[in-house]
Amino acid sequence: MLEITSKDTLKERAHDTSKPKHAHRFKDVKIKIAGLGGQGVLLMGQLLIEMGMREGLEVSWLPSYGPEMRSGSAHCHVCLSKERIGSPLVSRPDVLVAMNEFSLRKFAHEVVSGGIILYNGASLPADFYAPEVQVVAIPAAEIADKLGSTKAANIVLLGALLEDTECLAPGTALRVLEDKVKKRDMLEINRQALAAGRRFIEEQAHVGAVSQPDGFA
Image 1 (cartoon, one colour):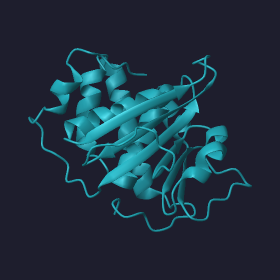
Image 2 (tube, one colour):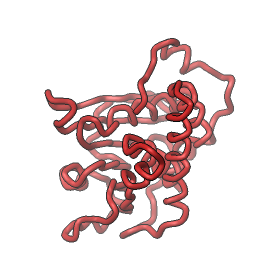
Image 3 (cartoon, helix red, strand yellow):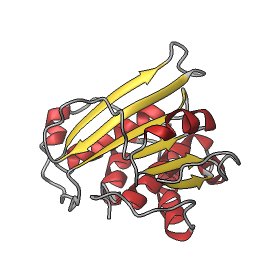
Image 4 (spheres, one colour):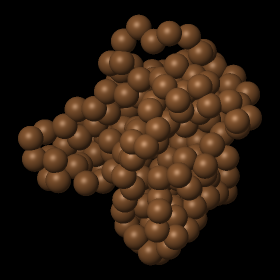
């Protein structure tokens, strides 16, 4: 739904001190985002690292996708840290964002004990079982469709991730969206999608919830 522009260099953005920093309560957060090409998987990761840089963190983003971007599977690895990042590869994520059932089943076993799974669906598959992690089913595509564009499902999940982990400030996300989205109507949809994802976490009960890992709460 959005496109990352390259007006400023990443170095300039990383050293931008004009905005207040978020009070990060973690040493590092490892996130894996997975789904189909065209669902905004890679973009969501790019938005997260842009936010992290603006908040003065060390960041890394590693994409992985099949040869057919629009129909093949895609996932990316995102690291946010107060210290230098040794490797961009995330083999044991603290957070998994699964945009479809295939990704949920493929990567759920990698999530650390006490970690978080955010699943794009109205409910979890009947036979899915992950007793040691907090799992939240979010009908992100349906929410985004009601707002005017199903392509904003990734932004709904971004809002849910920010609310559930508190790893980055929602205000930073809004500023990033304002810089990236030039069409006013699309920007408004994204603003609403971000807020809707946060609101869903605030208002809905978690499925199979457990205490969060150190650093998130």
